[in-house]
Image (cartoon, rainbow, N blue to C red; front, top):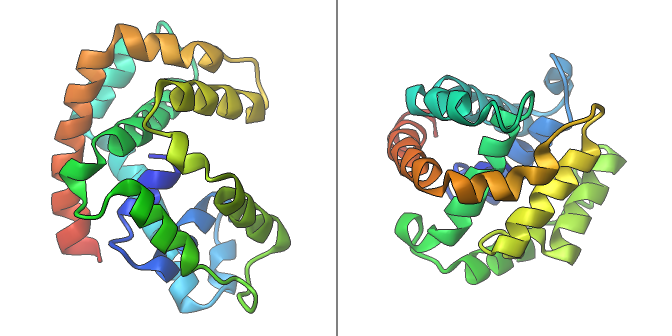
Length: 192
């Protein structure tokens, strides 16, 4: 999953959610150089990534769209699932998404946190530009696909990700709800 999924599976814990997002910025065992609360978030991030990467239905979905999105099908699934989580937020969380995001952002203060400058800059942009608020829309899905495609260091078909989503929307949506059922059971009861 992408940003929203990682925040969601942090179970309303802002400090854990920020450390979870940091998981994309720290490689290998470098996370061990940080305090325990950050290590916990990075490990949660990796468990979320591992869970989706090995989920039976997700693996079938990756196989189904791989021809359309070679090399980037798993990345597309992460984007699609964030889009669908935002679009179906009310089914998974008791607080409306705009209110949830406003509350989450208001609790973030990285001033005295030991995170590196590039991560603090990313979090500031996440708040200022409010990217996640666009996730439920088709335009938001398009922008996510374009943005991630541009960040990749290799030529890729993710720029067509939004049209692939439209073609496979029923299959992707069905897989998403199955994944969320299993992931909620796992992350909300066993890990946190």
